[in-house]
Length: 162
Image 1 (cartoon, rainbow, N blue to C red):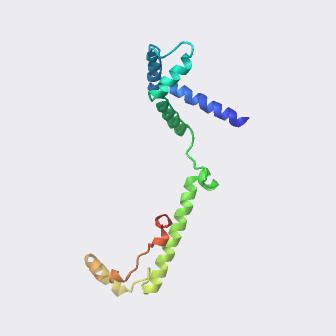
Image 2 (tube, one colour):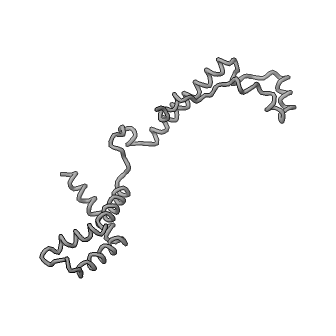
């Protein structure tokens, strides 16, 4: 019973919002104008006005307006999304980010071990002095970057695999 009450409450809110809109005044004016048409009969007034509005495209405009109001009113959720995505999307993103960072760190560590290039080490005093003196030329003293492999592979990006 509670679902029916929620639905009727949602419908009432949407109707209330649409009543004050420009679309409502246009729709009302169009319905009044169609009353002067010869094909509109008093015996079937309601159905004739509905069919006129349907034929002139106003039904689609009203459906689109209701659809927009539903998306403004209701939270965006995908019916097949896991519960962890629905209750706290930022927590899910943080968990995914932490997982991604661990994978990148693991990949960097394995590449540095494979190439024999330490990621962090204490420099000897003489080398520190040389680096301080040649700070501007430091880019030319680096080992060749062509020996390094890419940290990202197609396997790390599952949404691009097809």
